[in-house]
Image 1: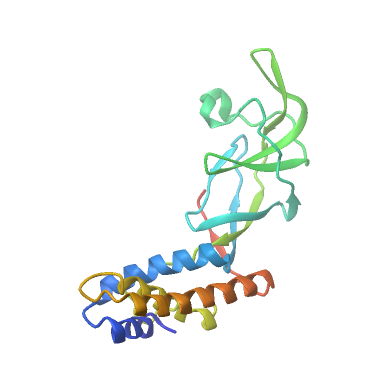
Image 2: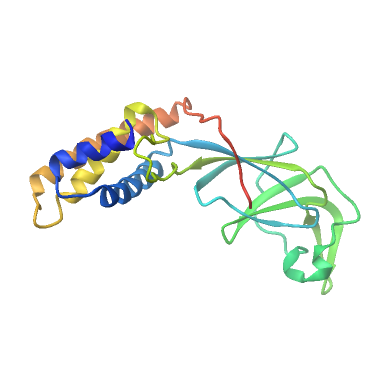
Length: 223
């Protein structure tokens, strides 16, 4: 269903709602649906920076499934290294390590992706030593993640990133929520459409667990 079709479906029940109001509501509904179902999986690609540890994540990422460096899956590090050697240390921290390693790891800190590699006694600060240093080379970083859908814009021909069979759920959510707002408040109608929405949430979860949903998109992301 295209955005216009979803808007028209909502307007059958709430004719006084305009396109802009419905569009904002559809975007909120899509965010809710994606978070509940984990239905959309995306691939994000970016190069690392030598000596740089922390990278901003795309705002659409809900959960990281796995990370690859140079086409090789790397494990998630349990816990954080005791020493940072990245850009927060000033000019000294911007220098890549003198030695490198293919034993690499990722972890999350303050909503950022951290990339490190293990090198024996890599860093010493204040009489403390860490075997982990920031990634020392420029490599392709590939993030496989559960993602939000792309927001609807002003193009009424735009389609949701959701599979076709689940797109009507967005209209059900908007219709349901709008039945809670005076002067059209109607609790029974709200319950009917909320039940329709939650039924498609349930089906979406099952579909996501089946692993059939892979968007195939490689979005260039500035971390």
